[in-house]
Length: 156
Image 1 (tube, rainbow, N blue to C red):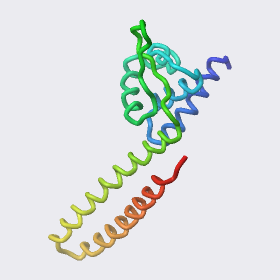
Image 2 (image 1 turned 90 degrees about the vertical axis):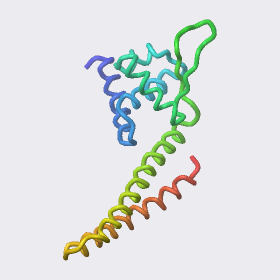
Image 3 (image 1 turned 180 degrees about the vertical axis):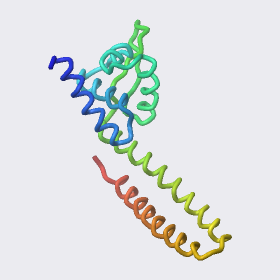
């Protein structure tokens, strides 16, 4: 196996870890490239390092910037856009994880509430079993919500 091929595999492994946190593969590859290169990379350099087109990398940078993982910068006298890691990577990943999971928890609880109201207007012997199912799962999602609030307080 060639060294470049091994390097691609290393980036892929890191991208897989990022994917398990809710990021896309391209996000993982961008973060890996910035970690490995240890400084500012231009959009074109990131595209070359990740194997993605500059337009795909550019779209992904917007997402990473929102979560505070990267920062876009311009150099004086240079028209290129540069990207650098921003702050503590683990803190940014933690924040993104909590935000994503928290959003899904809120959506689920809101939907459970709607379904509970809908069940109030239904009749039939299955109603009781469905209400039991809803109650059990709603309770677990609320436990997850409490857990997230605890995780939010943990300092890295």
